Length: 180
Ligand code: GDP
Ligand code: MG
Image 1 (cartoon, rainbow, N blue to C red):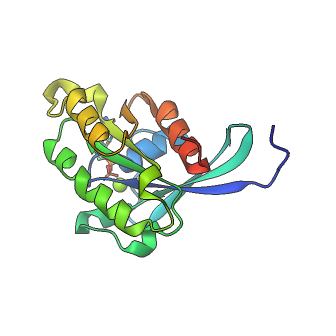
Image 2: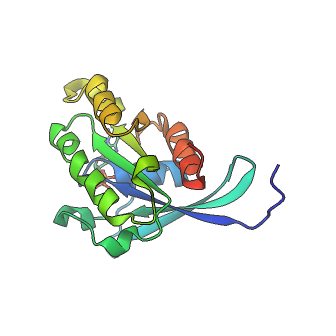
């Protein structure tokens, strides 16, 4: 058991195309709110904080939401600085958002120079499972992408009904702490 009471701050970034549900997933996980309120005055980038216990360690999870910056394509490298874990996200009903993942992943590799590519802490979320009638990406396709990119853990989530959010962010937090 850890005797270290210092609260570690872990930076977890969310990445994926505009509209896949990043802001909604964070608001549901951190504040149990859906739909999320979009404040016009909000200045991107934005972050949300959650206190958690990970492997007996008190930590502060700091979730970074690009909050609209992602619409302009690649995000400035400064935004990625000192990241501990990347959460990639696409919308299972939007094939284009799935095709974009390789670019978002490359952006992480290029910008997170504090992390080792061989042991890169990244997870993938396929969001909007509550609304899967017009599904455009199968779980098999997602799992294949994960296998081809170093065995990325995959979670199918819903910001609307909170499916799998604790599982997904629990894994992200453990990765951020350095456990794989
Ligand atoms: P972001 O651009 O990635 O931050 O996406 P948002 O969180 O702003 O969500 C875009 C739209 O998708 C909004 O209208 C949300 O209400 C909706 N949305 C997000 N997540 C879900 C989900 O899990 N299920 C459903 N049905 N809608 C969602
Ligand atoms: Mg957003």
